[in-house]
Length: 236
Image 1 (cartoon, rainbow, N blue to C red):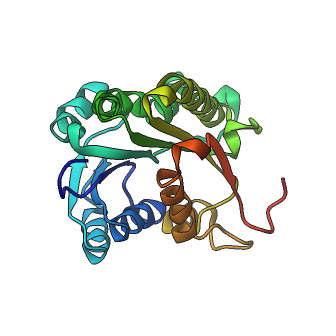
Image 2 (image 1 turned 30 degrees about the vertical axis):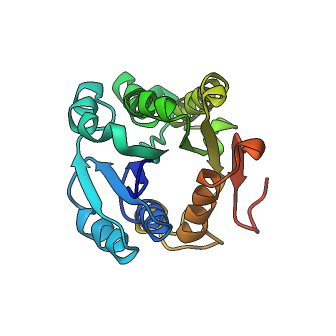
Image 3 (image 1 turned 90 degrees about the vertical axis):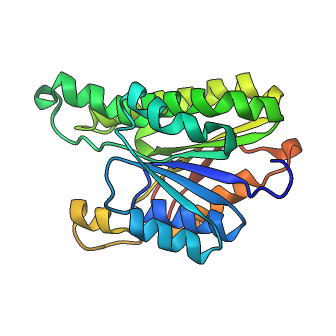
């Protein structure tokens, strides 16, 4: 960051719920936000939340699983990214013998390859500045592969390995890389659409977002590489 420029957050998987909370929380802490999503659907909601926090919002549209498309829309903004939060996923839940090769690949492309492509674009500028933060959103499936989650679990395991490798490679350059395991359901509209109304305690998206901001604010002498978050009533 130079002069009076506001730091900038790149949020992939920018959408309602947790995505909006992350964008709003960082905006209130002094950040501008660049959001990347497949559609315009949540752009107005994200823009409003960021502007309420005093920031400026830029919405980019592309499929995060397509490297050429990501590079085309993100490269013009890559130099100003101080924090990168990778938040998209493609939930595939079905018996293994019914899981197609395309479904398996797409789950990996969204969860892992999208993080790789975006990180490769922003990391050179972070390294040149000697600081930056990358937060990769994981899940319980990145620790335990449940039945009928072969595609999703494989993608999240890959993301966790990526986070560990990047942390070891770029930590000495001043880049903080953290993996966050969300061990529970987020209280957001898409959770209701997938699983129905809440029947147990869910994770408050603003509280999760506050934890992400905390990671981006940590002193280099005490960095968290992996954090797990869960509701108080969740078994583990």
